[in-house]
Structure formats: structure tokens, C-alpha cells
Length: 237
Image (cartoon, rainbow, N blue to C red; front, top):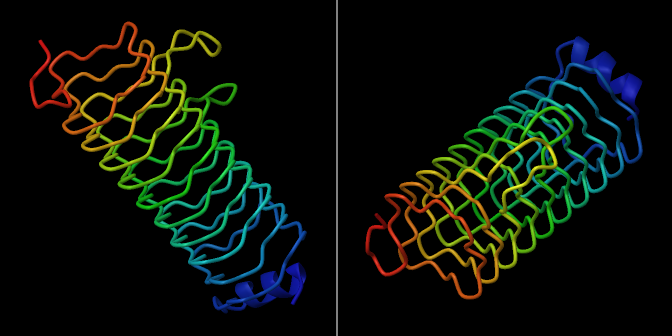
């Protein structure tokens, strides 16, 4: 089934496209809201600015796909493979990405507000701001996610749940490259998170919960810990 056939069937009311093979296909600026592409092969596809709002892409393979500005809000990508995918400026509001593989993915300027990323692999993922927008992970659920070596400079992670997450050697430092921006972890939950050797220089952790977190070797210069619950359970003044 090719792109033209899928669009024809979608416009005729069909929504089921499970296991379809569209490897290296181009499908930009299309409307596929609510379609089911579970287990589809979408490797190296170009899906920029396509509307997949509320679509199902469970366990789909989108490795190395170009997904600039795609709308995946409220979509189901449980267990999807997005290794080295480019999600710059993507809309991922309240998207389910539990157990997804986003190793080395680019998420600059993406909106992940309220997204679910429990158990997600985000090793070496790049969350740095795009040219005009910072990456939003506010209220996101990242429990047990692996963010080792991820670039999270200037990312908004306020109220995010990072309990048990791995942030070993992650970069969460303040930056002036895109304006004067600090990584915002205010009121985030980082209980039992692994922040060993992470760079938190200038980060905002006001009222965050770090109880049981591992800060071994972490860079904590100019961190705002006001009101935060520290690893030993004490409250920082």
C-alpha cells in the first residue's frame, strides 16, 4: 500500500492501517487524525507537519524518521521505536510514549506537556531549544526513564515526575546560547533518581523532591534548591 492509496482510503473513512510498510515514504502536511498505524514500518519516512492527533502508533518503527512539526498530541506510541528520529518542534501534548525507544532522538522545541514517558529510553536524546522555542516537558511522567547523557539544557521540566529516572551525566545546566535560560525542575519529583555526574549548573530545583536521589559527582554550582527536599530528607532553606 503506497501513500496515495492510504490517503484515498482514509478520506473514504478507513482508519485501520496496521503493519503497513511505508519505509522512506513522504507524507507531509497530511491529515491522518485517529488513524491506526500500530506495528507499521515507518523507518526513514518524512512526515513533517502531518496530523496524527489521537492516532495509534503502538510499537510502530519510526527510526530515523523526519517528523518536524508533526502533531502527535494524545496519540498512542507505546513501545514505538523512534531511534534517531527528528521530532524538532513536534506537538506531543499528553502523548503516550511509555516504553518507547527515543535513543539519540532530536526533540528541540517539542511540546511534551503532560506526555507519558515511563520506562522510555532517551539516552543521548537532544532536548535543547529550537531557534524560537524551548522544549516543554512540564507535568510529563518520566518515571524510570533512561535519560543518561541526554542534553536537557534550558528545558522546562516543572512538575515533571522523574522518580527512579536515570540522568547519569545528563546536561541540565543553565545556558545563554538561546537567551538566558535555566533548566526548570521546580516542583519536579526526582525521588530515587540517578543524577550521578549530571551537570545541574544554574538549574532551578525550587520545591523539588530529591529524596533518595543519587547526586554523586553532580555539578551543583548556583543551583536553586529553595524549599527542595534533599536526598537525606531535609528541606533546603
